[in-house]
Amino acid sequence: MQFDKEFDASGLACPLPIVKTKKSLADMASGQVLRVIATDPGSVCDMQAFAEQTGNTLLESGTENSKYVFFLKKA
Image (tube, rainbow, N blue to C red; front, side):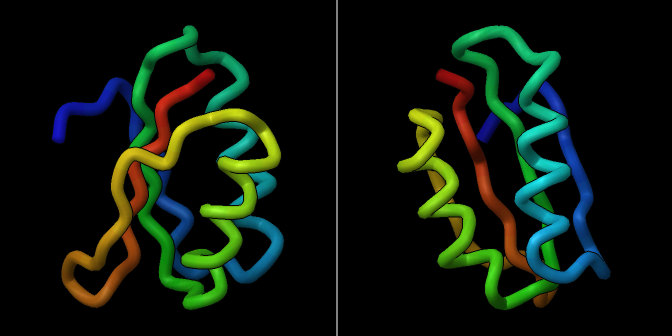
């Protein structure tokens, strides 16, 4: 999937992946896609909840090289 910006949250534990994802989205335009990479298993549930609470769209989530990868579309 194509994306406009990438943020690597590898090694960060809850709540830092979400906090830093929010900061990464702040300077993006509506409709742009952010790719987030995380190692915290809790980020799977957290990213879905974050998307629902903020109105951003979680386009896709999965694993890649034993890391969690998320694609968020900015509202």
